Image (cartoon, rainbow, N blue to C red; front, side, top):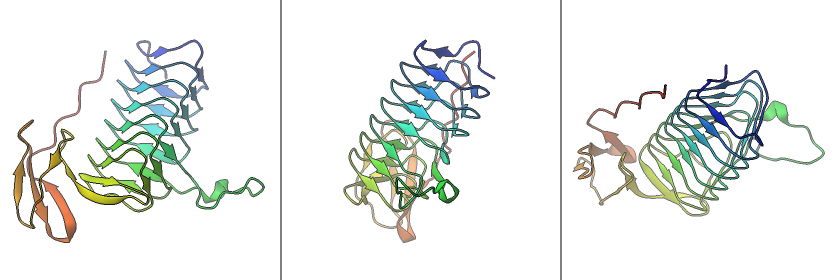
Length: 205
């Protein structure tokens, strides 16, 4: 279940059974719990925690000090900045057991969560969205949205490349100069990718 090409630092604790894909690197003092699934080509940095049964997709980067708790799912190519925080219950108390109340959190493909941002449980972070450092997210984040603040609010749109999109009116198109991807702003504040999504990277050998 653990690929021979995965790199696990001797100080890391990996509870088996779990799945760790080829080329994934798990660094100092990180703890991976049993039944976790980590895809190929990931970097799990120092002092992280990956909860029991957590699914992390391919080519994700989880930076120092991030805890990916039970019922949090990271799809492919997700970036979590240092100290980013997930929660799993709405009203925790030290003396009240609420594991039966965990609420699932989904971070969709390509999303970025900035350093020290907090993601309240039970939400979805949309595809290729970007959560600014220090933001507190307490509502769903649309695809390609740039959100910032406490609580987080959408302040713009970003491309797959991570560049900010200029102000658009409904019906306007925008072509990213970096990669040629094309976007269209639709009614109800949704940005749609017109061109195909880029293919996933190949898994390391």
